[in-house]
Amino acid sequence: MGNWVVNHGFSAVALVVWLGLNVFLFVYAFLTFEKSDKYYYTREIIGSSLAWARASARCLNFNSLLILLPVCRNLLSFLRGSCLCCRRTLRKQLDHNLTFHKLVAYMICLHTVIHIGAHLFNFERYSRSCKADNKSLAFTLSTLYPHEKGSPWLNPFPSPNMTAERLTFTSIAGLTGVIITLALILMVTSATELVRRCYFEVFWYTHHLFVFYFIGLVIHGIGGIVRGQTEDSMKEHPHSKCAEEYDKWGEPLHCKRPQFEGLPAEAILHPSKVLELQMNKCGFRMEVGQYIFVNCPSVSPLEWHPFTLTSAPEEPFFSIHIRAAGDWTESLIKACEQQNSPLPRLEVDGPFGTASEDVFQYEVAMLVGAGIGVTPFASILKSIWYKFRHADHTLKTKTIYFYWICRETGAFAWFNDLLASLEREMEECGKVGFLNYRLFLTGWDSNIVGHAALHFDKSTDVVTGLKQKTSFGRPQWDNEFSAVAAVHPRSVVGVFLCGPQSLAKSLRKCCNHYSSLDPRKVRFYFNKENF
Image (cartoon, rainbow, N blue to C red; front, side, top):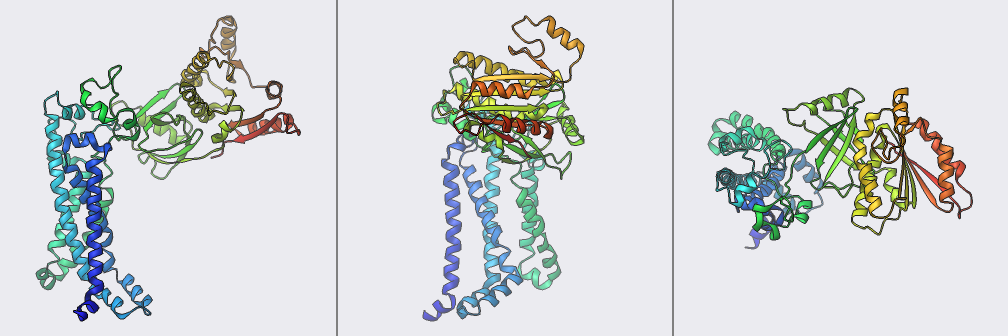
């Protein structure tokens, strides 16, 4: 017994630890997907086979991580060399590398069988729910949203006519699953003792299919066939309260429809070739004024372009506005304009912070946007609208001066609704003086000016439809700064710009000129967006 412990004790401990980790990962993942509120509605369709599939997948990933380590000869040589000071029994365990490699392979085969079996049940239940009684919860969940790219559907079967075989060979998860399984079967069967002894070349070359196995494993879950409810939706639509009245979802005074994880949601084309992309958050966290990098592989796989977020953190999606200004943006807009085609795949990196995040740290803020440079202030103004709607008393900012300098009248269109909503909200809250905005049109002609002069007595502006009249030409910054300094003689004013360097130079000069050396008087602090 003592000799056995000396020779095999460490191997036994390592084996127990490995088995224990597999059991822990399986049980933990199983209970997570079996009990999680996020997957409540998914379980209503496919039942416990969801937990079996995900638990076995967790163990598959873990063992696939380990499978190559025992056969990395350079790694083993390094460990032997670095363990000269170790006990002989520890170094001796490295001789069992092939045994451990085989044990891990057997574990992968076991969980592959469980995973495939669970998903066969899943596909069958998905298919049945499409054909179920139209008064059932499973049928309601399966037909809740149209089955389009970007739509937050829950059932991957788009219609009752879809078969499990067809979905298998037309989805990323299905195709990669077939490739992974075939590669695994060929590697395992060619690794038997008989094949290795009599046909070593077959064993050797077939084992190189591990490359396809790992490639398939990496991209297997990209398609997102199995989805759960989003975090924001779980707050607005708790299943404990809403599941029983599923036939009234979306009606007034009843629960909203549950939202499930989806891909980029909607593309909206505004005048002056401005494209708005709204994307589902799915765990995305942002602050006002932040920006992201966007890549569209179908347009250019290597180009990443920065765009400021135009949505507020309080909104259930995040959005950007893209103006046609070059080959890449024009190609992206053209791809999104196609009526009968799904949205192209978009990849997002971020969000990243900017100077505009500090806007709510000032009692008075001057926001200056030039052209499409208005985008970070769209996020700020939307957030202010939500803060007033929810009576947020933590808002430190008391007054905002907003200046937008634009060349074309059409460019105002996509921003008008937001400003109009803010006008109404400020009036209802008794905060008419909170937002003071000025719109400057630089690309005007005599016809526009004449039309504006003719209708000057109207209560709304003829260019924008807003109460504030549009100014023609560029702002006189000395007049603007002196007016703000006169109204707020003891305030700290934050000046935020998203625009060209020439405008930054003028604003920085005015900030220095109108700031008082006396800390008790007005001071202007300049901040500029830099990408």
